[in-house]
Length: 339
Image 1 (cartoon, helix red, strand yellow):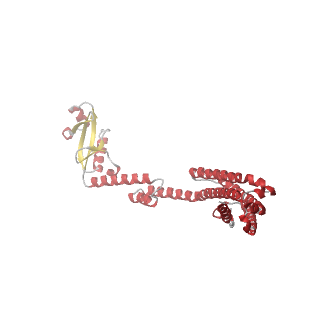
Image 2 (cartoon, one colour; image 1 turned 120 degrees about the vertical axis):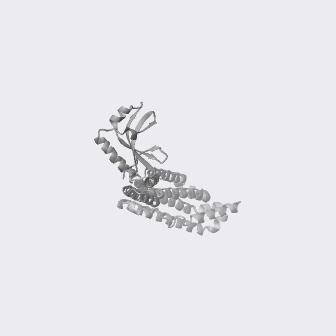
Image 3 (cartoon, helix red, strand yellow; image 1 turned 60 degrees about the vertical axis):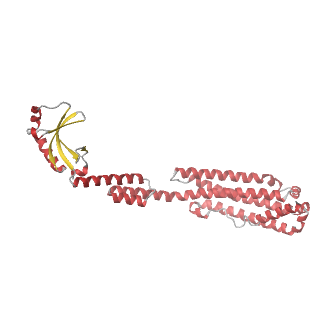
């Protein structure tokens, strides 16, 4: 059991040797976000990292010097009390470095201009979580910080318990830094998102201006997840339907007539004659509780509209063009029928 404890102490010590060495709290990918003053703060934070590294190196040297004494645990703890002090002081320097860096990153998170509201909420949430992790890291070492100036306490202090606290504190600091980096990445992405939205908008406006099946399809192909994909597909369907109806129209599948009157009661021959002299040419149908009276049989809208205009001049102001499909069903007069 004692051998196992010694093994754990040695293992943890080896893990800490250089765990922070070479580490940086400056997120260089986000350097474009830093002000000159913030860069100075981060540079200073790096000096705390170096101080911490130096203390760890000194602690490791003391531990190595007393390696043979590990078989006698109490004696080993007394001889390495200064190494424990160095490790505690190293953590204070690391904590200061992380605190300074995260203070800078928090300022950036709070003052940045966000294009996406959801991204802003996420960045602030990450920042809050980073602050909490850093506070918890400090709490993990608080009891040991009090021992740093007490040689007697350090001689009695278990290296294993100290190393466990240090490991936990460091993991929390690193987690805090990773969360801040993620928040900064979100801020860096805002410009790209803004540019993407502008391109999407411009492409949609171009598609609308051209207003063809091809232009809307080009938009969908270029921006498959664009804001207006649903609208573009609706326009494609609409134009395809209109194209189909236009072709049917060109193939002579429609009949155009001019309606001259409508009444809920049947009109007398005299009344009809006062509207249109050639009453024998008038077609009477009953539809939707109305008697409707129509004349003419034209191949296209232009001919029917010309006849309607003549009736207007002859005093039939209610005349208007109606259109029927081959089955005799009245349908809406479409714009493309008028050309």
